[in-house]
Image 1: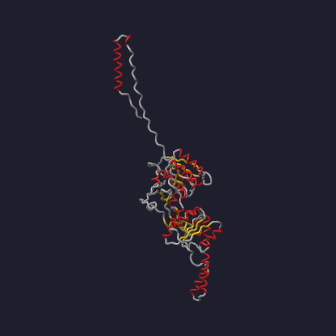
Image 2 (image 1 turned 135 degrees about the vertical axis):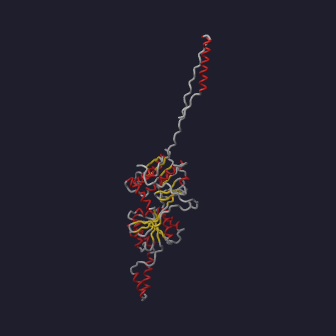
Image 3 (image 1 turned 180 degrees about the vertical axis):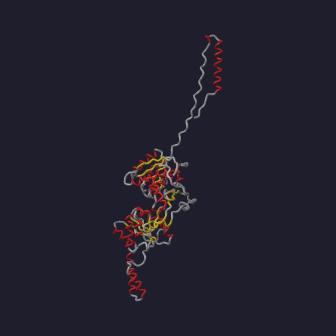
Length: 449
């Protein structure tokens, strides 16, 4: 603490003045004497107050911690806490709030944390809630890193961290074309996911030209009728009948051998594609694959291509009709590493999106250490970042790009046949950048707890 003392020269003058007055008083009569001026005490020491330390960086975490998606929300929040332990010393203050999966609840929660000084918002999970939160946060200039994968809501200040079907379709189609497959068709459900996948299919193939595609809906009978036309089944049945008739009119051994081989066939000739994108998952994916086989199209005549939606089926690798298929997905090694780390701490397996929350929190810690904190230029660093989800980067338009692997379904296992990239290609839509940097990679051990 800084202090100051009285001027010693001033004190000396006061003391001398007092002495002179006392001598003069002794020479004069009592009637003419006047009382001496009192000696002024020195001023008290001046204390300078130390400045208040700046508040710690505050980051809000808005997740559905109650309601139908509470289990997912809990895993995402636990992954955020795990990241704070694992990425090293930090001063980050987390402001968790429950959105209950409801946009209005999410908006109120956002207003509350912004009033408390939140400088960054992680979440929400769902697109409608993220849009409601961004409307409030944008007024304060606070960026939102949502876990949604809906590209329709992305924009400056609202980043979509989820794995978009568009980038998955582009990845698996690029690999398939690199393997010489040129006639790639598309099968998509009549829903928002299917429509986005179809647009990505068109964009990846430069408009798709005359390649076939089909949008299916309804029950299994309705889907079967759609696939019957899509596979040109009736035309191939007629082609078989014509081929048999032509061979039957010949008496040579070659014709008789060819005719014998056709007796076990239902159709003749290939389908009008050499690969097909199936943008679906779960039981409906199984049904589509089985119906394709029923119409004489299996993975021996056409490669099946998929997205991460296929991974919703826990028994995916046990489906005989899908063996030999390719799909775009995250790195299996990194997925396994995160699952081990998460289960070490929490004693359970994480939801698939939990690693996304870990990487978002690790990124928040990284960007909290620089000034200005959470600056848009830092968030959209084109070199990107690396974490349990692989390399990723945020684009100025609010979309995220991820480095994805290509996996093949074999009997009982998923095998990585084309690893995820370790660097991004040069630039966002033509903007040149340098090589990708590995950033925010978690160390193997937790810092505490």
